[in-house]
Image (cartoon, rainbow, N blue to C red; front, side, top):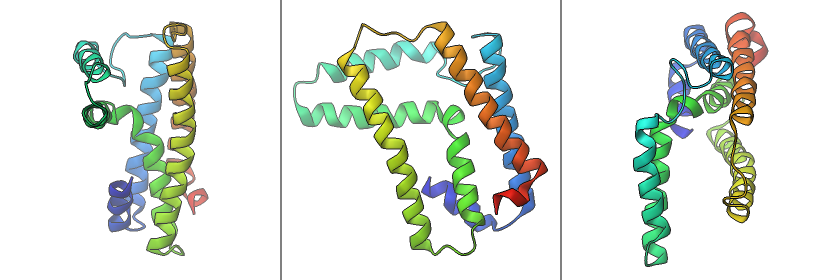
Length: 174
């Protein structure tokens, strides 16, 4: 997110950047809505099926690591790899947030860093809860197609909404 913020801060208050980001958000939202209706058919944002066996193999190797430091390093490496693969899925909301921060001329660099920390906290705490619940209920809960479609639809609507604001009413961003 720091890289996003740096990029947007360097671009300044350019309306073109805001419009381009709005178009990208619309595309991402449209792909998610398409996937909610035509699940797993055509282009989509997600981990490609071909990459999943390798990810699962790495996850099993990490789970079987002999030492905690080796497991920790494996988790860090795997998280980096998954984030790289899923960048297209996960970039939308951080891009919106960091663009909004870059448009706030009244924030100092320290203030922007504090807001990045707040976003991180708001992101990490719920994610930690989800991971804990998943770990406690491992193998008892699987996300079915219906739930996946609902999540795709919700994220599609959110991304399209943000995209429309960026394109049609960018003054609301200030």
